[in-house]
Image (cartoon, rainbow, N blue to C red; front, side, top):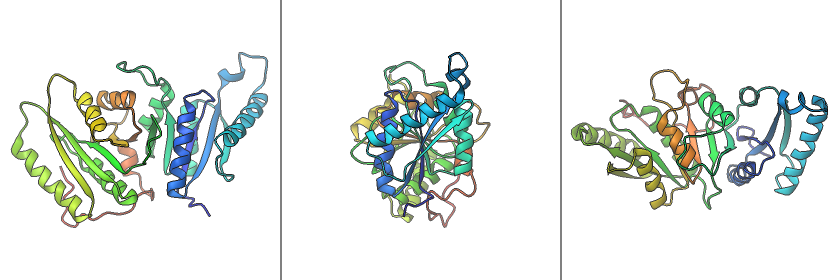
Amino acid sequence: MKNENNILIVPVDFEEHSNLSVQYADKLSKQIDGKIHLVHVVTSESWWKGAFNSNMFKELAAKKLESIVEEFNLSPDTEMHVLEGTRHKAILEYADRIQPRYLILADNYPSTKGIKKIGSTLSQIIISSKFPVITAKSVPETIFKNVLLPLDLTRNCSLKLEKSVKLAKSYHSTIKIASVLFGTTDHARINEKLSRYKKMYDENQINYSIQLIKKKKRMAFQEILNTADKNNCDAILIMTHKETGIDNYLGAFAHHIINEATIPVISITKGAAKEKGNSYLTPFVDPFGIIKP
């Protein structure tokens, strides 16, 4: 029997790029004994301007969802749901009801490297989701075995560190910490932080490595993406906002990482990191209060 806490919501719009999210979800579901929920949203634009009514579009969408299950040989217990409304709102409302482990979406604009452009549905979901969102950029051979964790060591990293520990304990991951340093960096403070972070990972028996990158001419996000490629990482874990403040926009760094990475990106909002009742990650050891600013 499938673990009902391991639901993967996969919104599809029947475009070719959606195939990546379906294939990635299929592979992940087999690893975690999870269950896929395929979701398509029929919007007013889908039928209002045409000759058909919404019910006819919903029936067509349901048949297309069935064809996806057949085409990708998904598990017979895959659920298919046709929703109505604004895409991102309908998906987020469904997620709130279902309490998934992840939402998995594909990039709407896979060929826009170097351009700050993410589909509006994807960006709105990433900004507002109470659950981690995986942007499926490819289907790597492994899932969450070698995860890159970009850290700004001049800021509070507590929530991001907590999520990395829980992810590693759930998937037996190796965490690759990468931090881009600037010329005015307070190295004493950086070293003190790193000492505490190392102790936290050691206490939790997590495999990890740390790479400090002196910023050259490239932007910080480019250094991170280059590090991911060089270390054969299979995912990048990011917080989409600063750990303080209001989650009402997608930060430039996160935007670039999501837009230009060639591997899946796990995006976690401050709300998702703090959401009570989420049981998709196991507890971790922090007996000495190491996670702090």
